[in-house]
Length: 121
Image (tube, rainbow, N blue to C red):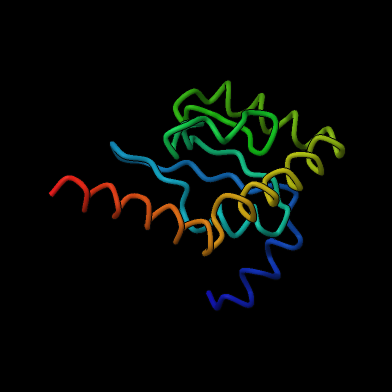
């Protein structure tokens, strides 16, 4: 699907549900794009993905373990029923990505890591 169409579909979305599989779970591009557009996400991304708990369940995303259908349904129902909750989580998710995953911050964090590695030599 062309990216322009993905953007149009996200603009119409009430939420984005993305459960990632595998031993190591990341945030994923689709989740990032949805968050940047203010679309609330429901995902199994761990809150401490970035080494410290920056993601907050019911704050900037909705956490589900991705395994319990009952828990997933409960979260989806909450989100569908409450427009204010969708708006809050969507906007907080957008702010999270803008603050924590912008190129300037990522470059600064990587420079710190490389500096620590260099100091180990």
